[in-house]
Length: 116
Image 1 (cartoon, rainbow, N blue to C red):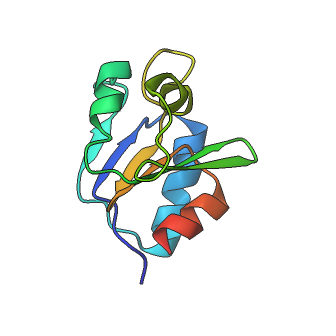
Image 2 (image 1 turned 90 degrees about the vertical axis):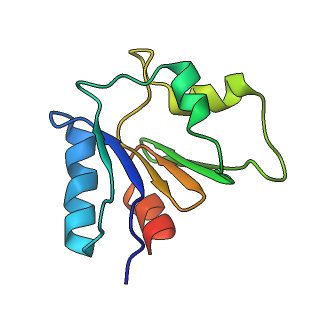
């Protein structure tokens, strides 16, 4: 059974967000809380605040998946923000909290790794 998503930040009109939604629905993944990025903006300060309790970041950009272990080898805030913040200056969508993991962007393999 797939893990549930504790918190999800996404845009309804985003093609990447739609691919993530299609994957979640096919896997039967439950989303406990949803924040719509079109109406609620998360800038750099809010993005860094999301890291409270997070041990791992799995960020997908295109075909590349990057993993950061914040517990053992936390980079500086600028390096983290480079993964979290998109070209608009806001948190990239989709972003999901799954337990102690922050899943940023969408890549099928990253979702399979984190959600099961």
